[in-house]
Image (cartoon, rainbow, N blue to C red; front, side, top):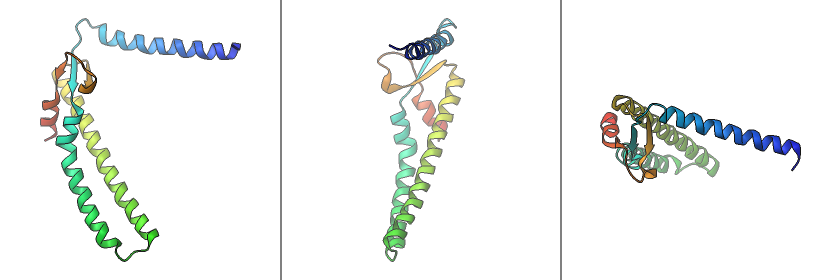
Length: 135
């Protein structure tokens, strides 16, 4: 192994060690840590899916109506406009979910919040509180 490669690998390992150490110090350095759990699939299904599906259906009907008399390039351009609108809506809903998770976590006094899909045992389930705060 060349000296330069050795220095790079060593630097990366040191950086990873520092980041992991900082995480565990911040979480575990406080004594008892409270871990919150949010089922993001449930939040997305209940909060995001209905309005996004409705918007998609409305845009599809509008696209079908408007594109009937357009050539292929114009159809592609119109489709991309609708796709951008839908993507922007989804981004806004995701930001709203993240804001709600942060707000609920602060109110509940939890130190860390993780997606329920990665939790095998334990944690304080905040899913219902997040959904309620989004209503």
